[in-house]
Image (cartoon, rainbow, N blue to C red):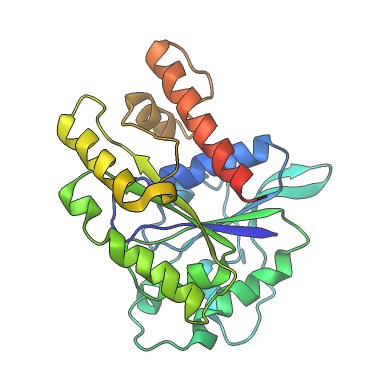
Length: 262
């Protein structure tokens, strides 16, 4: 099972939206997908609501337990009688965990070790991370094989990006997770008619070079509408603007997923 974190320390940059679309793209490609919501805001789970209460389902904070739990993820879909799509939902216990100071590498690696139980059941685990550089983000990076970073053009949104890139490098070089690969920075939610934002994007490409993915996901109203309907934007696409957004998002998701095999 490959594990991909969607990480950015700033909020409102589209992490959950990207995770949702990557999940749909992966399922449509025939992969068995496990979602892990490590953000206490639990936005990821809103796109995949439970049709009924699932008592005893595994929750994200339980992955940090010193002793292994027998609980299992909540199954969202089956294929040939086996779980093909499942989620480990965020819970209130994550709030206290992110405030823990001085966490050891051993503690940060616990979620990754716990996920090994499901390595044969799923092909891909997608991890939605919180907007911080705390325990939850670091433990997500420790558990992952890959990380992709959504980037929004703006002074506040770009502030701290260099720190996040350094954090990923430290996680890799400092021994927390030597196998971690940064898939790249994905420009998102920019206004293609704004000269300032296009200038920011050009500066970002000049600064980070090949680390910036060639795909771009500009701000598109059909994406918001699709999320509100709990669908990927390429589902039931109608109208020129919707079809354009659908092509952009499908291409970006397929490109990111394809990079996991290189």
